[in-house]
Amino acid sequence: STMMNETHESISNVPEESDGQGRLQRLCNEMISGGAERTTRLDFHIYHGVFRDDESFLPLLLEALRAATMDSPIEAVRLHSGVLYFLSPNQVGTLLEHLAYLPRLKVLAMSFGNEGFHFDATHVAKFLQRAQSIEKLSMGPIVTLSETSLQLLTEALHQHPTLQSIHFLNLTTSASLAATSLWQRRNTAMFNPQGGGLTPLLQALATVPNLQRVQLASHGSTGLLSQDEFVAPALHHLVATSSKLDSLILQSLGLNNATVAKLAEALETTSSNDTHLTYIDLEGNPQITEDGYERLVNTLVTGHNDRLTYLDLDWNNQGKSLQLEATAKLYLRLNRVGRHRFLRRDSTPEDHLRVLEKCLQEPPRMQLDLLFVLLRLKPSMVRDGL
Image (cartoon, rainbow, N blue to C red):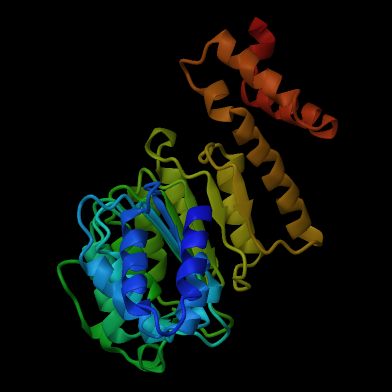
């Protein structure tokens, strides 16, 4: 990064009468080649001054990206808000599409843009179609889904060979998608795109073979991806079939108790050996009430879900909700210390001791509660001795 910064400073300060165009082209080529140090990370925050001061920089950069060879070492690209401030949404979209020309690109992260910066999902879809080495994609700016872009995005996601982690932090829908019934009428062999957006996204994500982390969040209170009868089974299918999924974050998407019930059902019917899901965050969904909380907490108490170590809901700090939150925290701690190892049929005395030792590493006020529950779940430990 230091080397890149020095290069940027020397280029941006070139006098008008010098060969500024040629130097900018050499800078672009050096960025794509990783520079003299063959760095694998390209951080566009360093170059925000060039984007601001020279309109010819972006076309030259796009040209350099199109000419990228298999020798380009760049594996990670980050675009910060300082860069997004100087580019229009279409320019950012075009840059995103061209970054897919980097043959070894594994990580692309885009920071939040300025308020009101709307970014069409078509650009993301075109990037995914071409970027066949990408593993982690994180989109901070507002990404707008229209009828066309939603279909393109789901098609690009379908069975993507390398994608492991996807984060859309500010999803919103166009007015036409929110109002249309087109998605209720369409039906393809790839997916059943019912609903206003969330259903086809979940269905497409369920086909990604290496998917580990999903984060979908709406922008403000836009009514994004409003609930319909198809969302709950789509979420059930995602959790039940994505054996590598370890993190599921669905924030401010209008989820309700019916959706949570299907999620709990998937957690109950999926064997501990067939799931890696340890982290669930459903914050910002006020339609999930105490009934929904109780349905999820019961999956922890009954032992059907002994892998989950983090569960975040909009707990109401009063009454039954307060009790449910305390119960959830206790059983989540049990999972963290290794309840599945402690209770499995082929567990050994050494397994038992390791779990009990972990219990004693927890805060003192929790130790007795954890030990009590474990011994209650496996009373033979008391009868037969450790």
